Amino acid sequence: MPMTSLHGPFGIGVMGTEAMEFIDFLCNAGFHAWQVLPVEQASMYCSSPYSCLSAFAGEPMFIDPRMLHEMGLITDSDLYERMEDMNNESVEYEFVRNKQQKMLRIAFSRRTDDSYMKFNPFWLNEYALFISLKYYNDQEAWFQWKDKGLRSHDEATLRKYRKLLNEDIEFHKFVQWLFDIQWRDLRSYAKKRGISIIGDMPIYLADDSAEVWSNRELFNADENGKFSLIGGVPPDYFSPDGQRWGNPIYNWEIMEKDNYKWWISRLKASLKRYDVVRLDHFRGFESYWCLPGGAKTAKWGKWIKGPGISLFKALEEALGDLSLSVIAEDLGIIGKDVEKLIKDSGFRCMRVLQFGFDDVGVHLPHNFPEESTAYTGTHDNTTFLSWIFSLDPEDREKALFYTDFNGDWTIGGPNCPVMKSWMHTLFMTRSSIVIVPIQDLLGYGADTRINTPGTPSGNWCFRIREGVLNEIDSGFYRALHEAYQREDYVKSFNPRPKKKKTT
Image 1: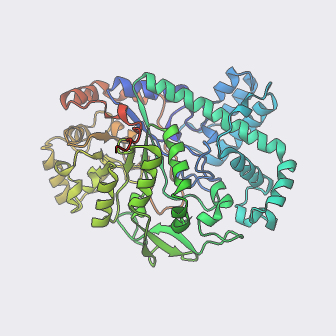
Image 2: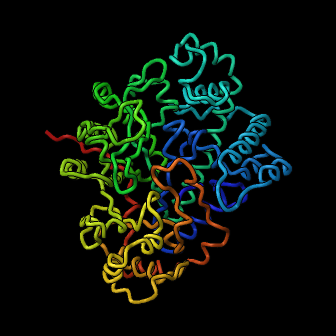
């Protein structure tokens, strides 16, 4: 479940009371982990958590205003103002973002000390300058900024703006300090309740991001932000035209020369934030679909070889054994080379029940290997109940026969009988980890889908309503964990230290 989908009075899920209540629910139902979508700061132009302004900075909208009230940084009136006119059913991103920024500015103006300055991770200075410059330039993308010195990241120009925007830079550092405080508090609470956090790392960065602006040589961008090559995926199950993501492609040759230092820093930071990281679009590390910068669709791209196992050897050498800390999202067009890369890396692969009846045998539950993570569906799928409805009668009959289900498959809701039947099937697979989207626990239909790939709007807005978790049969899931002897595999997910060489 994305952080955005939590209920609450602030128009979006936050890292406070409701998040802790969800952790309590997971614990009481016998679960051991909460998988979130990226919690990094999303682009101001779209709501996708896979298009971030930074690979490292947390999303300011997730900061719980009640924490600021407890810290004495906002008043009762400020808190009520923040809650006013909020939509409790879906996320209205621009409205919520503007409200949150106004409140955070007030909190910053009332700070009584400089303790936030002790928070100083390696990425913070560049990010705070970048985001300050974006607001200074009316939130335009960096490659649209009028000052050529800013576009080209000219150091003399940057010194001038660091002085000019010093107050704004300090504000954005302050906001990231607040995010870090609350995220660590949430992680600590989850740990006490035996719940690990599984994070999600997009393979690519947004073209308008702090890292691309400041390290463009790593992303094949010129001084004006022109990208000769961009990323995407070819036509597939989700989109007949493919998906034109538009993200800049990595300059893997340059990255290899310093032994993938940037990637080591990125994964290290992610493993500090999460217990486990899912590497999105893993097949792109073996070969990636590459498009000309001006391509209108993703149809006419080509496959180009990625870094392959050399990247993961470098990561393992620097960070230790990652086999229990990384999940490889190996969905899409997968060939023998990708399968070999997953095997050589030692990471867990993914299996999705919804793909099992599309002539893809590896996604049939009886074929799931132990070193896999099994899902009913992902954030890019419709809900499981909606999928059952969408099948043609012959395929639906096969799917129902597979679990020996003879009841009414049209009944939805938290006690949806066909969903419970499939939960039994999922839990009895050999997969060492089982993940279930919140909509499937609730037996919801297509109107609660998180994302439809290839569509520009209407995504990432779903929120659960207050009290709905109490409608889920927690005892049923506790019984499933006991019946199929599902132990807490997640507790050992932290990377193990690398072995010492013997002579």
